[in-house]
Image (tube, rainbow, N blue to C red; front, side, top):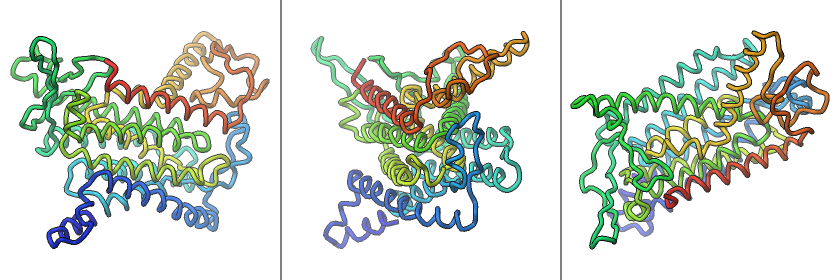
Length: 421
């Protein structure tokens, strides 16, 4: 709203009104505003929840040796993050931008599903919303995002083309006309564009439509995978919020260079008109998470719950899809991927062992972060653990910090891939 107000005032020569057109100005202002809102709202939210005795019940000591310390901590803190994202974006963002609208819809929809899950856990059934309903909600969002990017005339790109002059000099230019395209960026490859439509060249004139259909289903899968990975990572104080803030910074950088035609040309990536609003949104995302960490860092005064973790994963996934960097997500979201893989391996190996009358486990616990906080002698001697590391129990704060370090390294690698080909 403020963007449109100052754009209107600019025509009257109001000093400073023109600054609102600069992404750097609006982005940094959004970052600060979201951080302050998150910190201010967090204090009042925690007091409100405590006064109504809406809090985390004691956790299973066999899984979390520090669970007794977390009894009585308010949950559903994801509402703090969501409000701290939405308000600055409504105030400072361009609300006619298709990408801003998609990001706001993603935040509200997955936040709503997560809120239902947390509410049911607290008031009705400790198991929460049935997994099939959560998956259905994520799938609906994925289909909506995919179809919007397919059908909206505003969701376009300008493809980067490398031309060779005088036999040696390479220059990157962008096609003059923006077009709708299923092109994405392949990391670590020099000629780094891949069109999903080309995967269906054997379909002749139908390959474009087939490429878009494939894209829509890919978007749905990515949204579900990253959202669930974020949900699995949310198991320790500051873990998910810290990792996600780092991922948000990496995606904001990628969105910025994708929205700047000169930087996009220098880095030999496609130019995505309008994606500068994704930068504004992601800086609000980062600010909200940092402000939330003020209360969520060890020892946590509030937990985000599924209200926050589902929305966080969806935001990260949709951002990468909008800027056509979804194939970089396994690098950026390396921690989320490992959490998901550890659960899949643990579950399937346990089932195989049960069929043979054996108690098999790949890790001491899954998701993988739980394996680092198992005390010696805590597990049954009957279990056969294939990857029995570490031997001792790490402090929760140390586990969280080391996961943050891994995420920083992988986020840096994702950015470096822009030049490492």
